[in-house]
Amino acid sequence: IFSDFVSILNISLTDSPYVVGGSSYPPLAIAVLYPFALICKNVFAQYDGVHLTADQLTAKVILHPQFWVALILFFILCTASIIVIRKYRLDFKTSLKVTAIIVFSAPFVYAIMRGNTIYFALIFLLLFLLLYEHPNPIVREISYFCLVIAGLIKIYPLFFGVFLLHKKKIFPAVRIALYFFASFYLSFFLFEAGFDDFFSFTERLGSFMSNDLRLLSGVNLSLTAALYKFFFPLAPDFADGIGFTVLNLSVLALIFLCATVTAVVTKSDFSRYVIASAIVVLIPSISYFYVLIFELLPFMQFLRDYDTLTPKRRRMYTVLFFFLFFTLSILPKNFILHSASVLTMLIVEIVTVTKGEILPRLSRKS
Image (cartoon, rainbow, N blue to C red; front, top):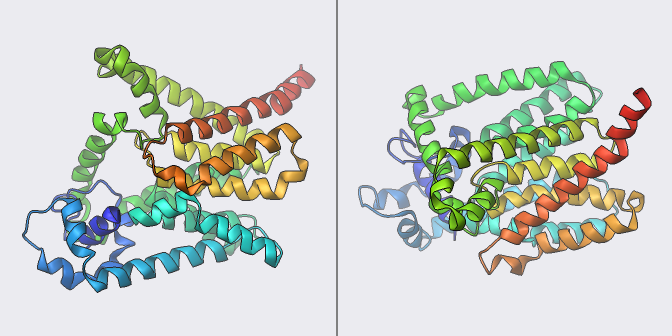
């Protein structure tokens, strides 16, 4: 508990979070917690030079009041931002209910328990979704930068660019790609080591993403982890060989392609939200429970589109969202069923869009 928060606070105070801190987080995901780290600067100084694991350091730091000041400020800022930046206009009573569901939902609670910076990725993604259709071109450009910032913190929210591609806004999508690569390069200069840290970062990230223990872990929701868990007991040599790598990349590429096409083509915002959120959860090879916080987006759209959905889809999504957000489901520390739930949503929407929209269009054209 709180280990992500403490680790990121600590390495954000170093000259090189990759050589000194051994981090695998992108630079902006570390720098965004620097203001909170300043509150605990003197606390971390007490343990400077002492060799401690992340859990051992956390156990010591949480005994200091400065830590709790930083954590509470982090929680209040993130929670208030997510609740206030609302694309969905609800009446007061419904708004209170939805706020309670969000704040006490399993992904939200888990993210606070870990203190992960994924909150900021969600905040900037919400700003993008709120502003990308604004009539003012300057505001729209700001929204594109918000999506870039979300991608710099956690790269996979960039998939929500399908909302622009659906509107045939190709040039804005190209600009977002250019902004992202330029900003990613510049983000390394947030720390004293500068771009010299890049190769250390890629090495750390590669080691983190390919760790066998993380792929076998029950807390990993990714498709890669699901495939690895399936093959490892049956054929461990295959699971650790090039054959599995080729199979895994082929499956991910196929799903990514199908998801992209259906998300761009569909006229349903609900389908687009479900598909985009599922990609954010399932495609990274290491995907921990807090990433389910992005499932709040299709949930909110589900509330808006409830009356337009078929009774069968209403029942299915009611059960799946209830399960994903049920807070006590955190306790077993095994989230294979959560991963299966998100995969079910993804497959249902891909099939629905393909049968209901893509095939009829192809039939009319032929």
